[in-house]
Length: 115
Image (cartoon, rainbow, N blue to C red; front, side):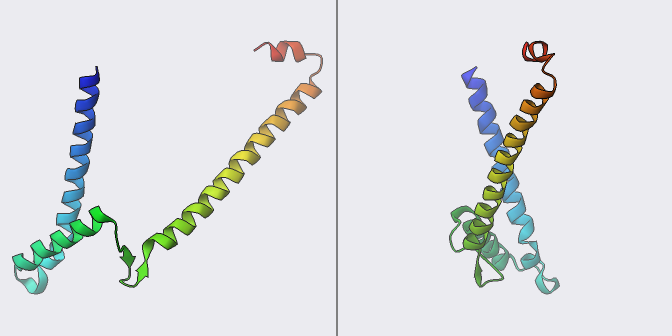
């Protein structure tokens, strides 16, 4: 059983890595076909640069000048704060609604609480 799980995990990781490399290769195709000629040296250089940028996750920028992580982290924490507030608000409303239902159906309280 453990062997099957390990093999399945290895298969999923392999498929993921192959997919990432395919995206890298396809993403670098414009460099290969620049000026309607095959520029293989620049293509392989572009593939290597893109792979290094993706797998090291250092100096991630967009538009070549804005750092990506500060912008993403700020939005991530804001989203998690909103998600937490929404979760606890929904939890409070659920408890309050359950309590009100029990109060309104006092005669059938034993029947409702037996579940």
